Image (cartoon, rainbow, N blue to C red; front, side):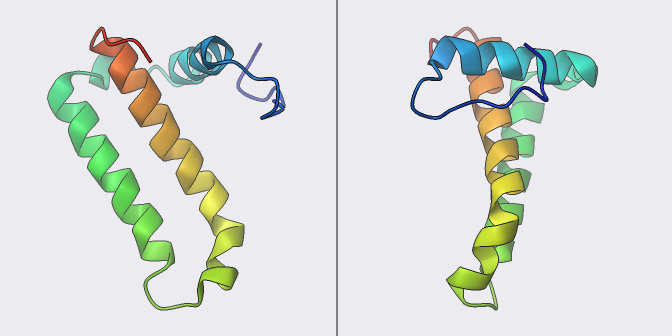
Length: 88
């Protein structure tokens, strides 16, 4: 499984999602940046970017661009918990 593999929400397990995210992170060599401080800062930044989409426009117009930011928040959250030794 690589980070370009399409996944179906109805059948994808958390384990498969974690494997996909681990591959995604490894392909970009991001492990070196994944300490608790950097993970919290990254999560804060990504959530801010997600919130910014909705700032001045109606929600309906923001939904098209929201997908990418939700994915980034998910990557940081799931991989962050895994790096810190928490079960997701």
